[in-house]
Length: 140
Image (tube, rainbow, N blue to C red; front, side):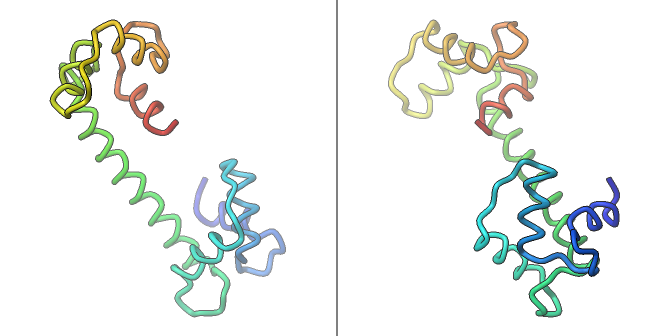
């Protein structure tokens, strides 16, 4: 969805501005994200360049751009963490999970215990975690 279309979806009253309430409703209807009025007001205040307590199209676009940057940073951090656990660059095996947890000072777990941990998030049933499965696990 393009930014103007998204902006129009959030701007429920069509006044060319998005209020904290409209931001909350828009996040709920588009992403299923429940946010308090206080959090919505804080986010709005952080990008409200003209100080009117509302987001115009330009301010809204900067908010969306910031969200994309946050997503990129999160993905890079998750990829780094995945690399710590993965036996290769493509998967986390029960043995590699056990090895990494041991290096991190976790109490000794057996391979079977690690297999059980992986099984909870092994969406394709192949016995290992791919990056996408790891991401789902970390966001749970």
